[in-house]
Length: 404
Image (cartoon, rainbow, N blue to C red; front, side, top):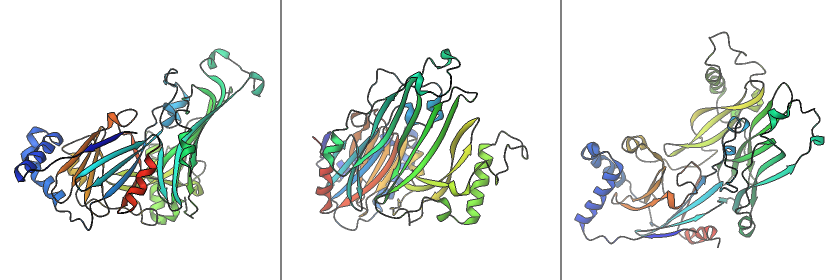
């Protein structure tokens, strides 16, 4: 567990201004400081907090660093994972606890997710089953072709439990696969208190004319609630058809109009009932991304993504930033995301390598944390969870991150 305390004593208005000026020098190019400093300060200071400033932010990161964590096409051909790197940390939870002007940071090497039925703890586990030539139905036509593949079935599945002791026992036991004849892999795309969306793929070396089979998949699992995973339930019919057309254009953009392999509204290009969605964070809010099953070359199926805009409230309640994150991105290109607390007292800005915490009443940056000291790879890859606690729930939630 990493544990940091950032505490600053403020000695008057001049020191406050000096500290905020340091923030601006870090977040802006020198030529932009004078032009942009006033607008950023005013944007943050214009937010009015509604009650106490005690908050806890839980941020879940996908920190998987193997080629398995990419789409299936990143794994099926040449896996460049080092065989000497035996374990990896697929998820990391960061807890940012604010009390007055102090910010504490806790981390856990698993996903600690609040649900409507209490906390769950999530990691991914790998299982390998060795195969022999007798296990393969077809003849091995060209042994040289498959010499780089392991005769095994590799499965990496999400492990979820309500007992923290059980998740601690799984730490450090996730094995990075070498290339296997058959691979099943799944990870978490996004998680809310009501459901989680898992995304993954299967791939298989077939020994036939079709060297590889591969299928990407998406699954929604509810925490004892009823949520639809059908795209049609959250977009209009008109929008649905427009999404299909746009995805078709994107997938087959190299073909002249009229010469596409399949008409956009016919099989086998897609099945209406299989059009799903996932959630992703963009510019401080959660978006609804359509996922349309499409045919690749040979016997490979993939999910084509299309951003439909901000996710509707039936899926997720979220607090919209009261300032334009794109304006801040103009000054710092590696900004990944930003969030604001429900009581409007605190703003956190995430870059790929740092976290910055601000007080909205003054516009001051209260703390900075370097992700190189926190995340396995030192960089934020993807945020898959954002949840807040206020008041008495702050101390209760803090305990879920203490695992040693």
